[in-house]
Length: 245
Image (cartoon, rainbow, N blue to C red; front, side, top):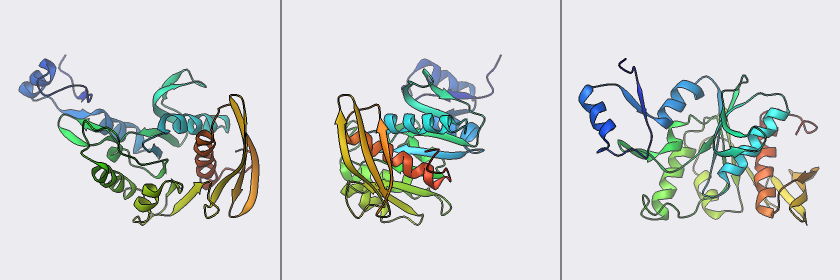
């Protein structure tokens, strides 16, 4: 039967035989990010994790934490999540977690994928020069992240890593609330007293200058403590209490 709609992945080029046939037959088509935004995100609270580094890890931590608090989140992540042994779920709850990739969307849409993800809340972990095959320099990447950050509405928030100077620059231009995290004393959510224990770690989180809690993570590295703190800050902004988190 003739398809009602074709979803075109970004590995497909315009000269692909299926893409050529698609155009010749006049069948409606969308990119994968468009399909995700239209069919799954528009009826959920969209939680988008973006950044040059740490997207998959942070998205996985966020989806797993929401699951453990009974929120039954949907998610679409670019890696297999240990808790679920899969990288996607429809979810019965109101939240949908998306790994917000800045790579281009499709052969007919060279804009970044995350521009289609309707973010209500976002985490931005870092911004550096990457994907040199499609971005000419850091300035072009900054423009893409600036467009993404501008999508977050006033009723939402961006959880931003203030240790990264480029992230600070980008979120300094948005109208929505910005919640900072990092190791600096000026961060609203501060990681302190980081302690490594083999492949695990523990750390203290301070919020607004006051001790918020002690946290253990079955992952090594200060960078993962920062990823977890971004999740902690977002969960707090979503209204979950400290004991649940």
